[in-house]
Amino acid sequence: MLVAAAASPAVAGEAEWKMLYDQSGAHLQRGSLEQAEVFSREALREAERLPGEPGTPIELSLLRAAHVLRMRGKAEEALALAERAVKIGVKVYGASDPRTGMALQSQAEIQFALKRYADSEALHRKALAIFMKAYGENHLNSAVSLHNIGAMLYAQDKDQEAEKYLRRALAIKRKILKPDSMSIAHTLDQLSAVLNTLGRQIEADRYRKQAAAIKARAQSPAKSSAYSVGNVSNVS
Image 1: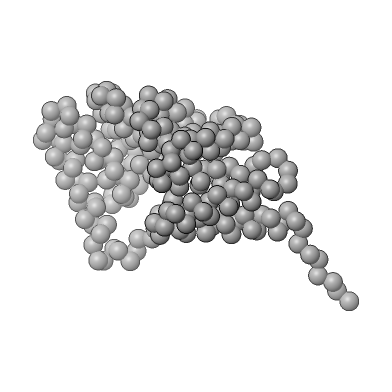
Image 2: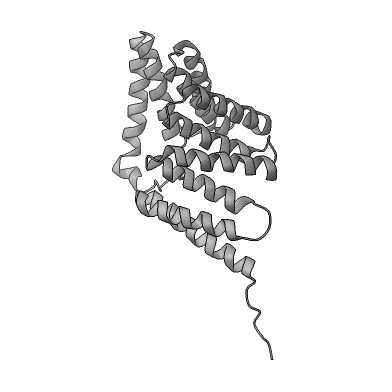
């Protein structure tokens, strides 16, 4: 007679964590931030109960919880979680691994929310160095980091340097993404704001109109059904 083997506690625990983590993501995509926070906290608690050294479940749960808490206006608590995720990334994957770079980006986003622009810029520069080494310049992660550095420079009134980073980000995105990518529109908008501050109104208007055209096409009835809800992470 065959006897079905019971799932080990580790396997059962990981399944429970995955369910909670997925639920937090689903609520986040629907904009139900209060429920997303509840499930992200539960997912983190479940991940911390898994046997063995801290690894991917805890890091993912920390980053998800940090993201949700930042959106909920709880930036200081979010920052502590993001810092833990970076430490785990360094220990488990190494300081130069792209997964550590993603954790650094999360930490940088929270520093931005706290209006600590110089700290955010420094973290984005660390992430950029990781992505450039791992992927080269013509990769979305590198382009996003370039955009984010440009945005931080703009927040610190370093407009001419900001323009250089944003133009690099835009050139890469136009090379590797489809023309109607909202990521391109985001960089066009940021570059337009910088150029406007620099007094170059004609250029600023041109980029602003290009961004508006992309957004209009994305919202057209013909395309609305083809667009699914994106990744929960912010992509600049």
